[in-house]
Length: 273
Image (cartoon, rainbow, N blue to C red):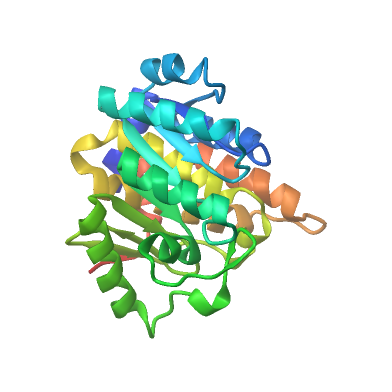
């Protein structure tokens, strides 16, 4: 199934509209190209509805949220809903400030995204479950572990049912849940957390995978998460003496670009609960 999801993206080459943060915008564009999609970035109110109209999916990332782009996010989101396009919300830093939290919750409630991708602290904030943050990173106290896995999955499934969205939580253990099923994915490397933007890249890739696999949305989201984690493993295995995290970032994008269906199918490490 993951192989088919990857091949559908490469065949369809979905055009994805990204309203994303300017810290990682270039890496997001390159990751989309590497996975087989096509990126376009637009965040001006006068531009976003037209751009959304020609795309198949919309990726909204609030990482560098500001008063100018908030209206653009809602305009693009409403247009995407009207056209039946995929919407993915990345609530970066929800819980870190009132502005971020209120904007993320408003976007979630009004736009009803097909998927929400965040770390555990951000998702707990949206659930009203008392998440805490360390800037835009998850707080260690919120971490998903083998010990609390069952209880977290149960709560996330409930949340997914309440808002009718796929919930993607990334961390040491990755969860991809709808109301009835949850993929627990164990791909990835801890060193990925030292690179700014792996989460931003993943949200864009999830958008591309959902756009190209609308009939198998949960599997598509899980395939995208496995792809990113596996690329992190492959990229790390190719590190040489003297390489640092800037090189690792490039090796991850290279691994995404060179990934094929057989590699993803064989390398994906997951279970379904």
